[in-house]
Image (cartoon, rainbow, N blue to C red; front, side, top):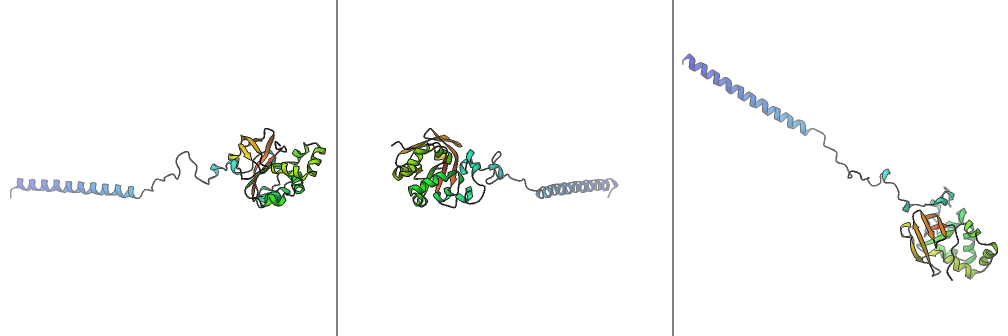
Length: 222
């Protein structure tokens, strides 16, 4: 074999070796990149859409319509039978007897013999006048009403609606146990009953009733 031919073969072999090496290195580089990508931590996917709040999170809060509201709510005891939690365990007449704002109303209910009636009723709404509401009535007039069981019963049953009314359902006309309608206007937390009685503390729950404490005694039309 001539020297020229031998040189040509060596050159071709060197070129083939270099090409094979380049291909091998490229394959290793490509394989290494893929392995690195596979070991990267996955991207976290938000559990809620941007701008939304996860259910039950602190930011979601509690709607006012789900809890008592109003300026007089601060006068309700923080604990014990007269507190919101305590009242929720008792039927309405019993619950009211533990609330210091409602002692005159409780006395009137006893005078009318309505304790058992109210305690045994199911799913009612009671508009409960405070002691100050009864104090607006001249003493002679109030004493006369308390002594007249029929009239007293008529007035007290006018404060009771035979269904539970949440704040969202409070506005409008509602037939009472006395049979006359009463009318509520406004929105949470500012409600007015029959244009004169303001709700001071609303959406108070008892075992069988939703209570709205008002600042004026309601009077039926007849």
